[in-house]
Each structure stands twice: as structure tokens, then as C-alpha cells.
Image 1 (cartoon, rainbow, N blue to C red):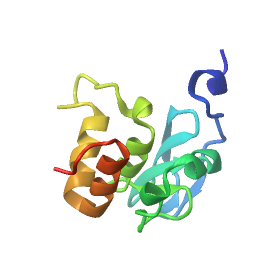
Image 2: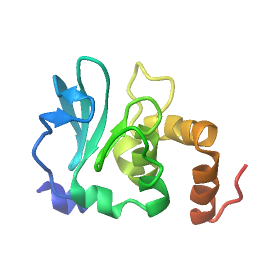
Image 3: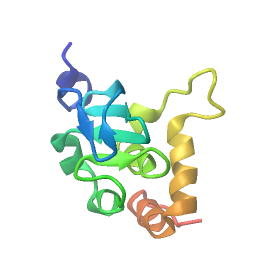
Length: 126
């Protein structure tokens, strides 16, 4: 089964350059979502298709990446909220599933975006 049939999104070529420099390490998290690292920083690189599918309030929260790039410290969580299925699996070394960590991260660092996310989910922001 191809990636589009499984996720609704096509795979894309891995990124070679990022806003943080030349990509040295990379792994595909899900079709169209790449984790990238450079000598000094890293983050998530997402396909144009994924970026366009993100709710504007999540996409517009990006400050340190560029179009299609979300830095690794806090902006990655915006991508995780947009595509929770790609961040649901907890690895044995992780204290919680990445999606759960993303919710905590957005709530802490992007309270306005968290409120919008909660409203979009039909919940009150806590």
C-alpha cells in the first residue's frame, strides 16, 4: 500500500538544506514529515502538501523556521498537533508519546495557539 493511501499524504524527497544549515542527519517520521539535524540545530521539514493542510493558526505560529520548516525546540509541536497520527507512538525511551508532549509544549509556549486548538477541538482552553 502506498503512503498516500495510508495517510492521505505523499512521501517527498528528503531535505538537503534547511534554515539552520546543511542537513547532516534525517529520518522520515511519516510521509511528508522529516526530522532533520544540522551541525547547530534542527527541526521538522514538511512537504508543501502537509504545510498547506495545517490549520493557519498552527502554521502561522512558526517563527524560527521558514516555509515548511519548524524548529526542534518548540515549533515541532505545532506540526504534531496538526498531524497527531504521526506522533502518537511512544518509544520505550520516551516518558510520553510525542503527541502528548506536543500538547504540553504548545500549552506552555504558545498559549494563544493552544486556546485556538482547544476551541477547534470543541474544548475549553485549560
